[in-house]
Image (tube, rainbow, N blue to C red; front, side, top):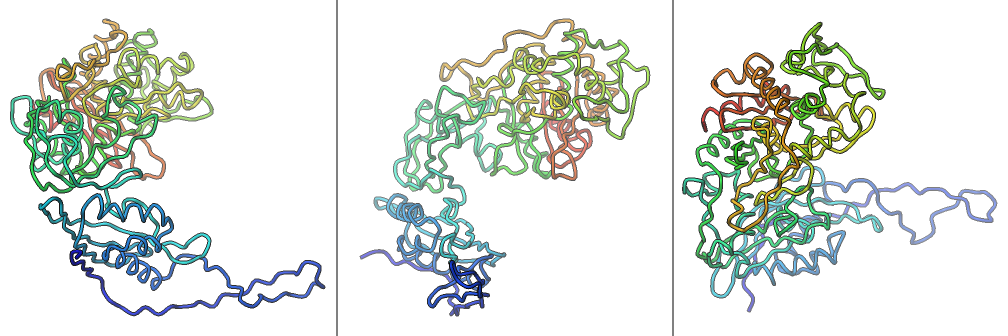
Length: 556
C-alpha cells in the first residue's frame, strides 16, 4: 500500500466564469459583402492574462494532482505536459519524495507562491524536506486555456533545464574544507562560500579521500558546449555543481586545504552582508592565492567570481599601463584633461564635467579623468587594449584554472566609439571583482599571477601565465600613480585609515536602465589586494571604497 499523501490546499468551489466575447465580423469569400455571423459551435479562443479565478483554480488543480502523486494529471495542467510529466514522475521515482504537502500562498497577479513539505524515503532511511517555490499561470497558445507555465524551478527553485532530483549514494564524498591555517570552513559560518564548497566537493571530493553518504541532490545537467567563458576547460568544474538538499546518512569527509584566510573571509562576509548587491574578493598579489570572496546575496549567483560587469574606471589601470609602455603618457608629463572629448561619434565627459588645465598624467589619473584617456583613442589600434589585457594581465584568455568556476574577464577588440569607451571600462569590457583584484595585483607586482583557491599541487593542474611582464619603467610609474591616487587622489578618502604600502583606484560604470551606476574600488595594502563592486551604489569611492578599505584593514 502506498504511503499516505496529503495536500494542505485551501478548498474552494470555483465557478467557471465565461466572459462575453465580441464576435468579429468577417466577409464570406464569394459572398455579397454582408456581415457574416459566427457559425454554430464556433468558439473564440480566450486571450489576455488569466483572471484571478482562473489563476487560483489552475494552481489548485496542478498542486492537488502533484501532491497525490498523479504526474499525468498534474502535467495536463501545464503548457509542456511531456517535460512536466517526466519531472514529476522522477520526483517520486528517482528522488524518492513522498508524503507531499503543498500550501499555496497569496497570489500576486498570475504568480502563486507555495510551500513544499515532503519526506525522503530510501532503503529504510527517511528525512524531512521543506522549501518554497512559485508557479505562474499563462494561457495556452492554442486553446487559450489557463495552464501552469512549466519550468524546472516550479518543482524546486534551484533546478535548471537538464537538472534532475535524485536520492542515492552521492557521487562525490563530502569534504572538510579548511583555510590556509587549518581552520574548518563551513557554509553556516561563511555563507558566501556555500557554492564554492559545493564546487570543491564536486571536483575534489574523491581526491580528498572521503567516503560517500546517501543524499537527496540536484544533479546538474551537462553545460552548453562552449561552457562559461573563462572556466577551467580541463575538467568537470564548468557550470554549477551538484547541490545537496538533504543528507540521509553522512559519509566520511576528506580534508581539503584551501588558500582562504578565515580572518579575511569573516571580514569580507561582514562588509558585503552590510550592503545591498555588494561583492568583494581578496587576493595575495605575490602568489595569486584567493584569501576571501563574499557576496551580499550568498545563496545567489557568485558575482565575486563569475560576475560579468563593466568595471568602469578601474580599467584605467590596464589602459594606463598601455599608455605608459607606448610613451603616450608619462606620470609628470603634461596631459590633456578637457571637459569633453569626442571619438567615433560619441561625446564623452568627466564626472560633474570637471577639467584640468595644464595638468600632468599623474593629476588626470588621480582625479579619474575620462577625457585624458579618450583623447588617446586616435593613437591606438582597435586591438591594442585587448593585447595589453591578455599579454600582461592574463585577462580574457579563457585559461584560468582556479579550482572553482571563474570568469576570466573579457576585453574584446572594438572600433570607433566602443573602442574609446573600452579605455575607461565601458563598451564591451566585462570583469568580475576577482578579475579587478587580479589586475590591481599585477599592477603592484608587475607580473600576472593567476588567482586560485586550491593549490595546483593537489591535482597537478597548470596555472595560467601571461606571455610577458609589465615593462619595468611603466610598472614603476603605474605603482606611483596608484599610490598617489590612494594618498592624494579620488581613492584617498576611503583609504585614509590605511598606511604604509598602499595603492588604489576608484571606478563607476553606467548601466542602461539604472538610475545609479555600479560603484567599483580596487586597492592593495602590503601583500594583500581587494576589489569590490556595489551594484547601483553610485560613485565607487563612496560605495565600494569603504568596503575594500575595511576588509584590507581587518584582514591585514
